[in-house]
Length: 493
Image (cartoon, rainbow, N blue to C red; front, top):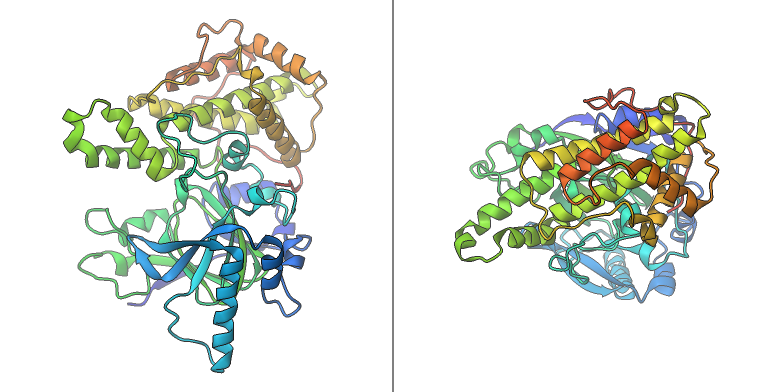
C-alpha cells in the first residue's frame, strides 16, 4: 500500500531565522522544519567524522568504548518496539565494522540484514560532561525538561521512583548511531514532547503524520498503532490507514530537524548515520504533556479496575503504573510545575525592581515569563477541574524553598537562559539576600504557608500577579504576540 505524501518539510537557513520567527512559525503552529547552518562549530562534526564523511568508528571505540548502551535489533520486534540489547560501545562498533566488511566483500549491499543493530538513547552528555560535543541551538534553549533533570529526579515519590528504571532516565539528551538500513518504527515522542535531531553525518528519511491524523494509524479501539508503515498493513485491523496523509523529508548531514509535539513519525537511515537528539518541553507544549498524562492515567485505571475492590491503595497503584509507563505521574508533574512557577515568579519580581522600562511587564522577557506562568496556571486549573489526586501529598513552602540548593541552581540557569534568548538584563542584588527579600515581598501576605495542590498553585500565581501590580489576562496572550525575543544566541548544555 503506497503512502499519500502531501507535503515536504520546509528547509530553512537557521542563520536567517530569528527566535521570534521560530516561535511564531514552528512552535506556535506546531509544525516540523529542517534547519541548516547551525552545526559548523561543533566538535562532534570534527572528531566523529572521517575525511570521506563516514563515521569515525575507531574514535568512539578508543574514547568511549567502555560505555554501556542500549542497542535496538531492527529485525526483532517486542510488542510495539524493537528488541533491545545491552552491550558496550566497543562491542557495538565491532559488530558494525563486521557488517561493513561483509557488505564490501560481496561487492554489493546486503539486501536482507535481519540483525541490523542501532545504538539508541545513549546519555552521552550526562556520561561525558567535560567533552563538549555540541552547543544546543538557541531555538531549543528554553528546555524545561532537561534543565529540571539536571537538578532533580523526576520521581519525587519513593514508591514510584526506581533508580535503575530506564524510563526514569537522568536526562533526555541522546546520541544515536547506526549503519545504513537501521530504522525506528512509527511512534510519537515521550511525554508528547518536542524533539530536535541533528545529523552529524549520514542521511535520514522522515515520514510524519500530524496529530489531527493520528487516529488513522490506530485500530478501531485506539489501542494498537501501526508498527511499520511499509509493511503489509491490514485494512481490516487499521481501516483508516490508507486515508492517512503524510509529510516527508530527507535530512542531510549538518541539518537539524525540529519534531513538534504529538506528530507520529518513522525514520530510516539511508546511510551510516550519527545523530544528536533532545526531547524537551516548555510553556508552549505543557498542555501536550498534561493531555498524555491524563490519557495514560485513564487507561491505567481502566486496566486495573477489576482489582479496585481488593486493593488497599488503588489510586497509589494507578499513579505508580503511570510513573512506570509514561515517565512521570500527577505528583511528579505538579511538583515540576511548582518549582518552575516559583522560579518564574522570582524572575518577574526582579524585573519589577529594576524599574528601567515601566511598565516593566511590557518588556520581552516579562511577556515571556507571564506566558510561562499563565501556561502553568492553565494546566493547574485543568488538574483541579478533573479532581486530580496527587497522592502522598508533597508541598513546597515559600519560606523554605531558598534553602534548596538545587532550586537556586535551577533559578540561576533559568535566568541565564532568559538572558541568552532576550539579551542580558541587569538585576543588582546580593543573590541569596535579594531572593529572600523578594520571597518575603511576594508571599508575606499569602495565607497558605505551603503549596501542595493544583488549587494552591492557581491561587499562588493569582496572588503574586496582584502583589506585583500585574493584572493577568483571563486568557493566554495571543499566539502571535506572546513575546518578541532579541537577536538569536546560543547556549551551552
